[in-house]
Length: 187
Picture (cartoon, one colour):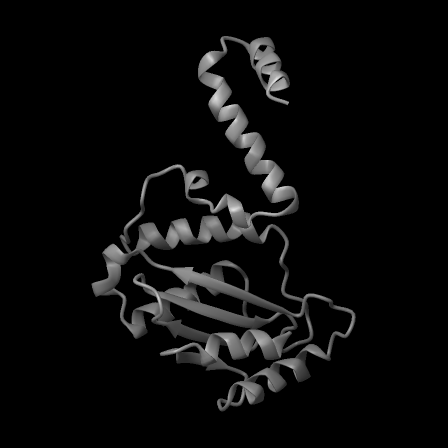
């Protein structure tokens, strides 16, 4: 819900509201109520808000001041077609790496729905472009190795089990049939 999400981002220790648009700035419940009221303009929409965390590398910590973070967050929203809507940008200081949270209404000011189609793919593309544009640190590793597999559930858990099984079997196989047999033997 708007209430829980806005409360989470704003009441975290040392959280700082950096930017807001279209909402009354005040206690978290006031901001959430503003967003909830706008979402009522499209009552059929089930996923009424978006919540994104933009994380920067600890190596870039010295260049990430509040103004820079807001600029990058706004450019990210433009690249993701999150415009003409209510939003808040909140910086958290609870981790070693700089990061901020964007909470936005998926019902625009003109009652149109802000798409979430292919969000993951578009987000990766937007983050990569911003990282290159601002010459931010980009760690070159297999991202799948950094995933906390113990927290995964459902299809994501299965996807990573398959990935790990193939990665372990592949060096021992010379063709597709050998890979299929090895994976079959592993269950």
